[in-house]
Length: 257
Ligand code: NAD
Image 1 (cartoon, rainbow, N blue to C red):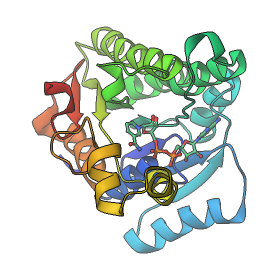
Image 2 (cartoon, rainbow, N blue to C red):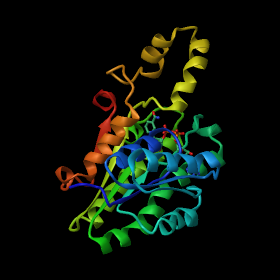
Image 3 (cartoon, rainbow, N blue to C red):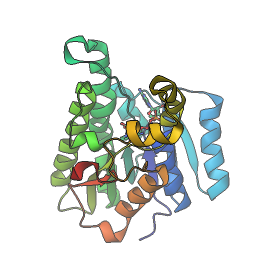
Image 4 (cartoon, rainbow, N blue to C red):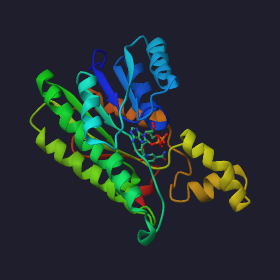
C-alpha cells in the first residue's frame, strides 16, 4: 500500500533522524509535519524544501515536546495524522548521585511522556480513518543499558513498554505500533563530536570512530538516517501489517553481544 495521501507527524524533526525519517516518508508521497520547539525561519524553510523536492504538502509546527499540552496541540493543529513518529529526544550523561533532577525530568518528559501524549491525541483520528502507524524511535538503550545514562536508558525502556501497550490496545484494528532501536547513527550532532574526541584521545578520525564511538557496535559502521527512514517506510507498508508491538534494532549487532 502506498502512503501517498497519508499525513505523517514526526516530532523533533528539524535535524538528524527525525528529518531523515520525514524525508523518506515525503519521498514516498506522504504529507509531512515537521516539528521542534524553535520557531525560526529555517525551520519553516525545511518544510518548504521538502514540499518542493518531493511535490508533497509539508508544514512545520512549533511545539515543545517537554509540555503535555503542546504535544497534544501539535496533533490537533496538524488535523490528526495517519503516521505518528515519536522521535524528539535529548541526552545527558552523569552518574546517578550527581544526575541533575531537572535533566532527569526533561529527558523523561521529552523522550518518553511526549510519546504518550501524542499517541493519546492521535489514536482517535487513526481509528476514525481506519488506518494508523505509530513508530517510536527508541534506541539500543531501550533494550540494554550503559552507565551514566540513567534517564535516557529509563526513558527508552519506557518507550519500548509504551509501544507494546499501544500495540495491544489497537491489536484488532488496522493500526500498528512499533519501536525502532538504532545504535549509533551518524547525525550532524554525532559528526560534531568527532573532532573533540579526536583531540581528547589523540587519535585520528577513523580510530576514534572505530575504537571509541563504535566500540559497542560490532559492525564498526554507523547506521544512517536513510536506514532509519527506510525502516519507518517498511513499517508503513502492507508487508508490515502484522508487525506490531515489537522492536526493530538497527544497531550493527550491538544488542546481539
Ligand atoms: P538530534 O539532536 O539531531 O535530534 C533531536 C530532535 O529533537 C531535534 O530536532 C530537536 O530539535 C528535537 N527536540 C529536542 N528537544 C525538543 C523539545 N523539547 N520539543 C520538540 N523537539 C525537541 O538527535 P538525533 O540523533 O537525530 O536523535 C533523534 C532521536 O533518535 C532521539 O530520540 C534519540 O534518542 C534517538 N537516537 C539517536 C541515536 C544516534 O546515534 N543519533 C541513536 C539511538 C537513538
